Length: 453
Image (cartoon, rainbow, N blue to C red; front, side, top):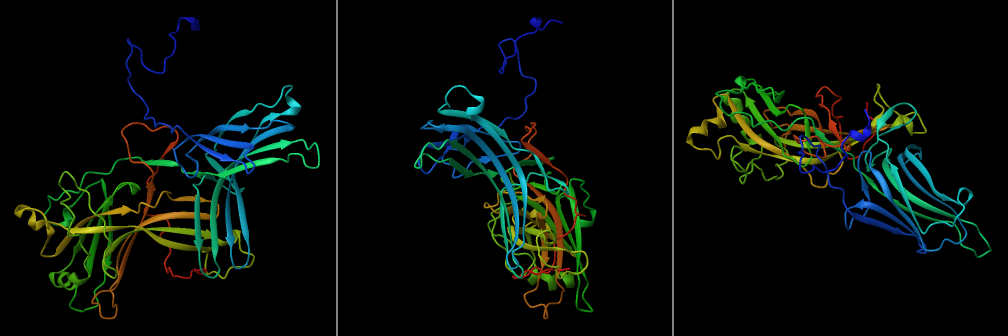
């Protein structure tokens, strides 16, 4: 068939056409990021940036595009542009360092050897960021810009940096002639991702006992709070979270907590119950956002923790004093905390009983990610960043408490974007299911971290 008989392509539908399906498109920013050389003779202009951005930013498979502008083309021999990234793990005490090259791409925009005419005053370039990198042992997704400091003995720093640079090479015509000029700027790499499924509908309140709750969209995590008293019973803990365990960092993560035991044990546990928010609206109202405030320390609380772990084998200059097969040191920080509300506290008379029964009590709540968090978890060579939801009960005076402390750790994954019914573009990856069976949070966190087996 001749291509002449085919209709011409138009980006937008014509009068006789209509759109059947369309991939969700994000509008690329129209601003420029400009970096000048010290002398002002060379300008590196990066397009597609937010107005007023302090640094350029690119996503998964991003195009690093722009122009190199020259004010003086005399004696120019060549003009090159380069993007590169590095992952550096450094041991502070012993001085061991491991550096992995994440991406390296160099392009010659103009060369006197291959051009007859003079060098242009403005040269366009376009380089594509890779989606993966290899450290010679394995291949990993290209990690985001990141920085972490692990204090202690030994101490470590972890840095993931990216930059783009322009180099103008000149022929030196005299002792005081113009020298080569380079302009470099770091940029942030922020790969986007979204959950494969939306958050489920709220867990039903139409039940008479927590044991009869069955909902495939919600995952049940269980623990036991041990009683120290002979006449006291252990408390069974049931924590419900959205089943995929993959959540957008912009969304509140809903949770439901149930404690089941004898009336005596539940009454004894009351001083250690979750701190509740008095300003939290009813979760079943149209506007179900919950104001986040910190829980009281030393009681039952739910937190979102981030752990940065470094494999010391790749950087230490000596045999690490480790036990077993664990060769990691780590740092754990809180990046979010939940607020609880007692079931039935704001409900009508018909729902007042949902706050508990003779042998159970219940709370609902939300965990919000701190606004300062802009990077999701990742693994790259000897560096790994993991996120966990942790439900804990730590009595302020363990010796006087009628219960032992308890901890429930659930691995989760965060994404940059919310789920959408529309298809995302190739620059937004789909975060896979977060398996609660993955390696759990390292224990024995301390202010000074050491090798720990």
